[in-house]
Length: 400
Image (cartoon, rainbow, N blue to C red; front, side):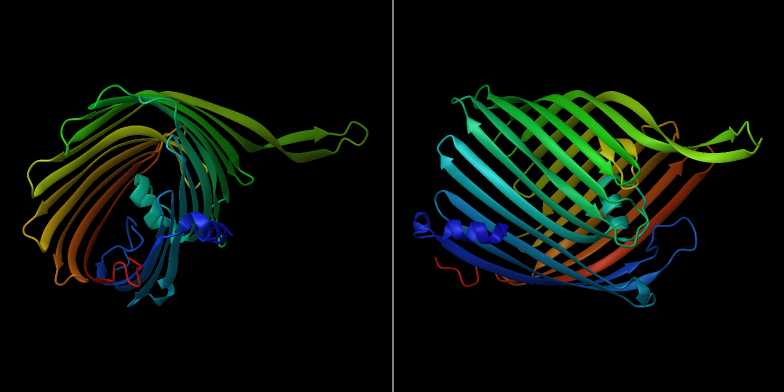
C-alpha cells in the first residue's frame, strides 16, 4: 500500500521530468566460522555460502523522492544443513518537500532475520538463533520556523514476531521531538526528547523517557564532532506468579492457589553520546563514536549500555581500500539480577574494485564475549574469515 501511494503521487502532474533509475546487484560470499552459535562450549564449526541479490528503485523530482530497497539473503551450511536459512530486508521511503520550510519523510520496513547476529551487532547480547519477523513504520516532519531555528516531530512503531519462540512478541512505539538552533556557520545545538513504549506479550511493559542536549561543531568541510548529554527514566511493569495458601474453615481443606501479582521496577540514569568524524588526509579517515543509552533486549529486559566504536579507513589507490572496525560494548540489566556483559570485536577487510561494476572483498573478524552473573561467569569467542564478490549495475534503465 505504501509503495502504491508513493507511485501514485510520483505519477501526477507534479512529477513531469521525474528521474527514475533501477539499481540491481548481487553478492556471493564464502565464509568460515569457527563458532556459528557463539557458545562457550560445543562450538559448531562450518563453511557457509551466502548469496545476496538486491535491488533499488529510485524516483526523484524537485520536491519528491521515492526509494525502494530490497535484499534477499540465502545461506547454505556445508555440515549443518539444518541451519540453512533465507532472510530478507525491505525498506520503502517517501520524502516530500511541501514548501521551502516544510519537509516530511515516511518510512516502511519489513525484515526477516536471525536474532543471534542482530543482537550481537547492536549491543553484544547473545541470543538463541531463531527467526524474527519485524514490521515497522515511522513518519517525521521538519519545519523551519526561522533561518536559525527548526523543529522536527516524529514517531512510529516496530512490531517483532517470533513464529518459533522462545521470545515474546514485541510492540514498540516511539515519539520524538527535536528542536535545533543554528548558532553560526560552524555550530548548532539541539534538544532531543524520546519516549519509548515497549509491550512484551504476556510478560512486561517497559516505558522509557529520555532527554538530552547536544552540540555539533563543524571544524572543516570534512571534520566535525557531536557531543550530547542528558537523563533517562525507565519504568518496568511485570507479573510475578505467587502461591497463596487458602484454608476453608468449613472443611479444613488446604488449597494452593496461584495468583499473578503486578510489580513495578523503576530506574534512571545519566546518558551521553559522542561522535568524531575526521579526514586526516585525502586517503585516511576515522570515525569514533561513544555513548551510554538504555536498550530493550529481546527477552523483555531493560539494559543500560555503554559503548565505544571506531572505524579506520585507508585508500591505497583508486581501486584498493582498507577498513578496520573496532568496538567494545558493556551492558548491565536494570533489575536486581545483576547480569553484566562485555563484548569486543575487531573486523578488518580489504576491498578491490576490479571494474566499474565488479568488486572483491577479503575480511576477517574476531569477537569475544564475557557474561557475569551472581552465580556464574561465561567466556566465548569466535573467529570468521570471508571473501565476497559483488556485482552491481547502478542506474540501469535510468531515464536521464
